[in-house]
Amino acid sequence: MDTKSKCKIVYADDAMIHHVMMKAMAQSHSLELVYCASNGRDLIDYLIEHNKALPEVCILDLHMPILNGIETAKIVRDKFPSIRIFGLTSSSDESERIEMLAGGVEQIFAKEDMSALLQQL
Image (cartoon, rainbow, N blue to C red; front, top):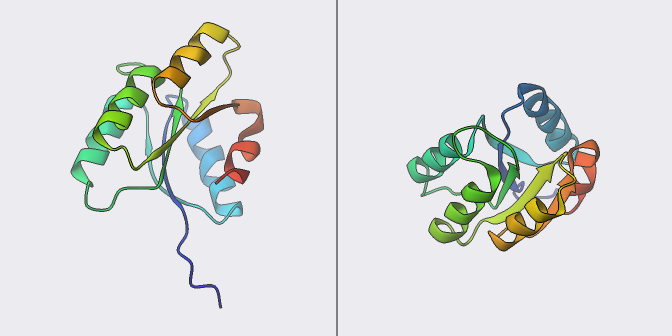
């Protein structure tokens, strides 16, 4: 029997349909989606509140209200350096992608291919 614990992930995206898709895909990849936020501020608040049981991975949408993916990545990288950060976006703007990577995101994936991201975990 495999006693290895599931990789815990948190996800921030302002589109609720993507929360539903991420939950289903995480389950099919044997990952544990512990929290879905609708913006970066809610995600940061969750991480601060649950800092004794941090997830291994944070997945961020690029465009969100209140706190976007770029700014959220910078805060997560600064306050929670043990968390791996990945971007998920439908944007093809190369300058935004470069800025997100500079903010601490390891890799950026297209929303159209969420499964490629989850296979990396």
